Every structure is written in structure tokens, then in C-alpha cells.
Amino acid sequence: MCHNTHIGCFDCICSQIEKTEISEKLCAICRQSMRLRFDRLIHETAATFHKIKKRKQSISKYQVFVALLELNNKSKYKTFTKLFYIFSKSINTQEKIDQLYKDITIIQESKRASKRLVDNNLLLRRNMSI
Image (cartoon, rainbow, N blue to C red; front, side, top):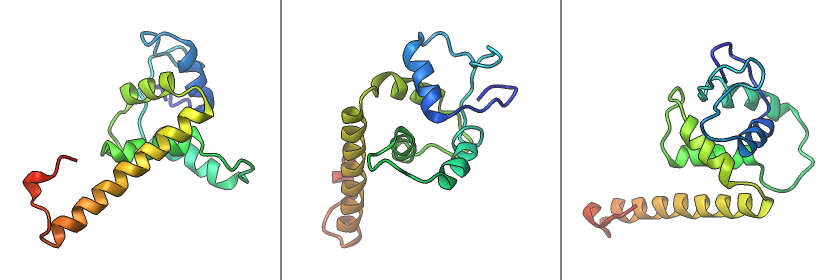
């Protein structure tokens, strides 16, 4: 999360960002500037999340954010700080999280459908707007 590689819970970091100004991109532990990268945040916390028994049936912020990274074609080692801040500020209710996940799923499915049409020569690549 920061240059000292402090790692925080995904939901806690989202809550911290939701309550602070965008200009205050500071680590909650050492107050240094944050540079959020997949290999420091998502990869480290993903191992922990897989070990925890899931009690909720609803989609988590973490699942939605990983899907959003995939949709934006973010590289595993590329920083995503700006996207994470925008995401944290805009997602504050479970309804918004669920709706965003549905939207991402629809976009991913439409991309797969467009690719199938192109592969079958039923749609020209130049007509694809996705």
C-alpha cells in the first residue's frame, strides 16, 4: 500500500478513502503517500480472503474491484491508485456495489458475444464499439 509495504484490509482502505479528501492519499499507518498496486494489495489480501469462510451471499467490494480491474485491462504490476480512489468514493451502499457488478458483468458478456460474432464472420471488427 505504501513504500513501507503496509497492507490493510480492502474494506478498511475503501472506508478510509471514502472519508478523506482525494488529495490526502496517505497510508493510515505511517502517513506516507500510497501507491496501490496489484502485487501489494490485491495479491496479498486475496490469499487471506480465500481462507476465510464466506458468510455473506452478497457481492463484496473486493470482487467488484477485481472485475473492474479486469475490465480496464490493468496489468498485474501497474498502479491503479486513481481508479481505486474513484471506486472507493462512488461505492458506499450494497445496492451500488450490486449494480456496478451487474454492469461489469453485462459489459464482459457483450465483449464475449461480439468476439463470437467476429470469429464467425458475422460482424466486422470496424463495427465493434466495445
